[in-house]
Amino acid sequence: MQSLRQVWEHFEEGMIAFLLAAMTLVTFVYVALNNLYTIFYTLSDKWAWSSDLFAGIGDHLMGYAQEMTWSIALTKALFGWLIFFGIAYGVRTAGHLGVDVLVKKTSKPAQRILAMIACGCCLVYAGLFLIASIKWVSAVLVAGIGAEDLDRYGIQIGHIALIVPIGFALIIARYLEIMYRIYTHRQTGLGLADEAAEASKLANPGEEHR
Image (cartoon, rainbow, N blue to C red; front, side):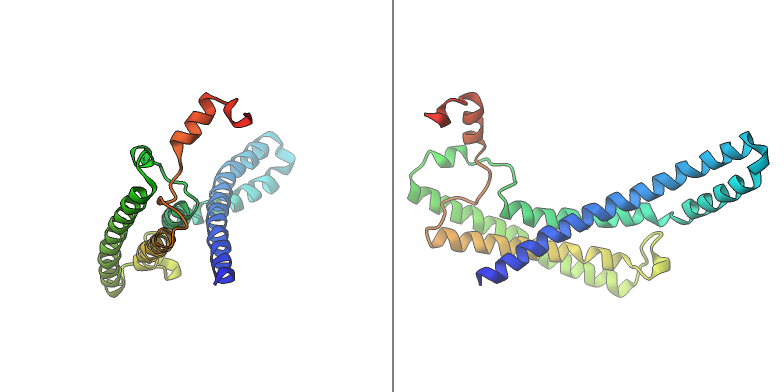
């Protein structure tokens, strides 16, 4: 079970890295092409003896840039996938905003009870959105609406929207894991960042060395 969890965590991190890299690469290529062809046109005007060569290169680069109208739509789709993978990843890595300062002042049993209630609320919230998103994605897939600038490649809005129910399913899996850990006394909170403790360390840097 532990090895399966490690495989999933590596896959999750790999997907986030891939999405970030793909967004960066597509945007870089599009911006580079839109700036390079003007350079060759300038060289063509400056050096008459090689104007045809530079003009031809500029024409090719401009053609490639004009054909990449899909790059913006693809970047938006990748960003949407990144958001929902990032939500589940944030739950796992305690990357979300911590608002449990008052809870920390209660006893350990009370913290566990409050954490279980909060975890249950998160599960209900994610469950409602999961059910609604499945119905929405199913309707969009049946409608067969093509994604803007990506429909030429057979990509539909429903294909991009699949990440919504997948993302909420991942969130539910993470909170089920947290609830199990709370139930088995492995932790007392939701795993959120302890910002009060971090702020205390920053305010009193010498305390950690005492």
